[in-house]
Length: 66
Image (cartoon, rainbow, N blue to C red):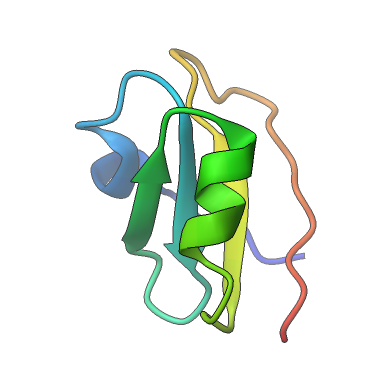
């Protein structure tokens, strides 16, 4: 499994949810809640969503390509 360092991409986000592009690891959308983030990325491919938190140590998610 490939490890990603998203420290720079997530630095300015304090709350909510983010959608991250699988190819270049950039944030493509941000929203206050899960329902809002899913609406924002409906037509986007190759993204994964994750909650924003103060500490990502040990955070593991599955990425699927659409």
